[in-house]
Length: 374
Image 1: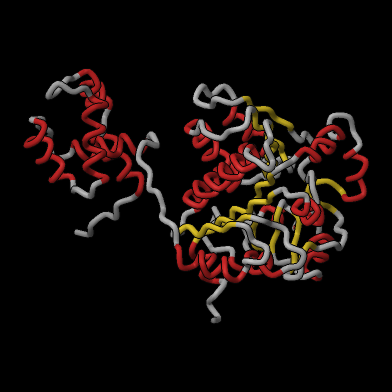
Image 2: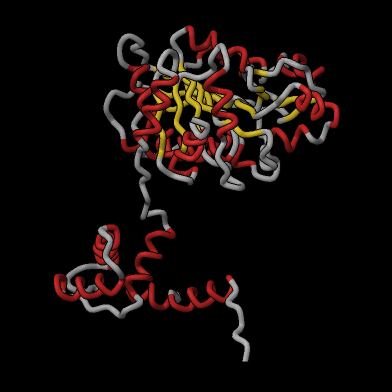
């Protein structure tokens, strides 16, 4: 008799049965060894993070803490914690690749962090840590700013970075300004997922008692993609004009990037709706984008397209922004859709003149591709 293939739904059903609510309700109320459910959970997770197997954890709980548990309970407890985000893997630095990029870009790149991972969430966490360092830097001399203004681009990558930064901001108390003001640098781009709109990121910083400083927000309420001929007119509308004027206050810009060859690129997706725009970018040698504005191997693409993204800044504004002592942080991790590295975009960003960024956080596969021909 042929063995039936196990489907994902079968596995999920079996897991649901193993972790049925009667178990959880019983265990939540039950005291064992003088400890409640959460205290036992903390012990099991600690031993799990130390590398112990479930049978070993069961034995340790019996020998050290006089708590007996069935063989499946360590699995259930770890799954319970993981599902709530209480267990995290912290990806380490890749120092060798970091030093190679620092040497290659030492004349202009102020800081770089290479994260030894193939997962964007890890890059986002390290990107948020570098952003915190920049915020603290702007509060200390010679900047000495009591209010620091941060501009966020949009997309899945930036959402994760903003979320990670909110956690760090809630855990940090030293060398912080009195207030941080967050600016949306682009209008919402993905109508099927409004959480990628930077205006939606503001919710991470609202009414969080852990955040001990004041927060302010400047949104960009406009269409995501507009006809280029309408762009200047839209910029002058009430409510949008004030947002563009506020860009003069920006101290730090945070953005990601994508590769034009990636079918998950939002810029490619929207430009493909205009045959003329798509063809224009193809002819111009588009290899990717930053701030949802197209770039070639030589720099920002100036060729006018029929449609374009509604953005607060142009890439050509960034060199002057940097000359004023301000900072641009590029957080470049694998594609969220296919997990492919973005080496092509990295190559362009690190070689074009003038340079568009001051700080860089990226994954190890993207960084390694930069040196594959050496």
